[in-house]
Length: 505
Image (tube, rainbow, N blue to C red):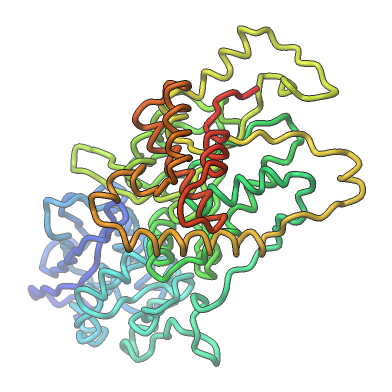
């Protein structure tokens, strides 16, 4: 029926549209009928989808097929779901080719199609590949994607790769498999690697200790120190001491980055995400939003590290937007068409100068800032956000003699082992606690009598609130886990209280 035959024909092809980090099933219905030749797309779609008409027409002709000289009506069902993006190019073209009997109609049986078409018939990769494959597993067991896709993994055997529309002449058997190479192994099986090692950071052993404690207990961390002290070097090495990604964590991180259109090669190798947005970022860029609604930096840092350098330079509303996501480990964005939920389980690492010039309290340098400017600068972080940062560490400028001599301290491998052992102790201990104790951070900390008495005295002296008491108890418990103590001793508690200090000078 590729010519001018006029007969009513209707076919259905399975596709999907992205909504947050999910792919919602969409049925692409293609109907051929008599009338003025052309393609009409209906079904609550964004205006951008109308551009598919020209791409599909040119791609079909360039691939050696024939565009029917009939009226083509494309319905994207269900009609009450808004669709956007260019992923419908391929399913629309497949529907037209099946309706005109130019390809075997069995290719649409139990398969989900997704991809943007180039004018020469090539199938181009798009964002959200992981979400499409996940949906295909639930619905039909097979997904057809561009063979330029970076998505390979445990579900690779359920993915068929297509590079050009002309390959459909041979049916699904003519398409490539997602698993490539002679070994048939996915890059997901490889181990993470990084050239960044803490051993390169000289004369910052106290800061390294603080990072071990923060990583062991999943505590938010703030480093305060002058420019050139090594705060950024320390932060960029934090992912190296975190435990390897589990399969579930890796799948979630891959999903978020795929939906956002971000590269996923590093995550596929097991490298935890590291995001360092500039301080000029907007609240929407940090927590997510836009049209279509996309995950923000805190979601792209999911299962990894979010580094906020020059923390006081961030807009106040941007910093305060972190408060609830840090507690819930997910962000909810409300729009007219519903609520979008993105995961944001990240390790927060922040850095700040003690004052606008950066030299307050720095030996050998004189601070030029007026006291009012220093107070205003430090107040930008805000009390509510500081209540959610458990570890505050002073990072002094390293000794020039030690830098020149290249003194070696703790390295990434040694610190990673400390973190792993501390987390294993914490998991074992929590498994032996009942639900009531788990809800009580002081009880679950298991403090010794002397430590508990010291804690009560410091809490009265420092006027600690309920949240502050709970967080100090958690940090003290983490310090004890790092030290291998069954119960929190006074030294563990004093160290935890030292990390609670808000004095940025």
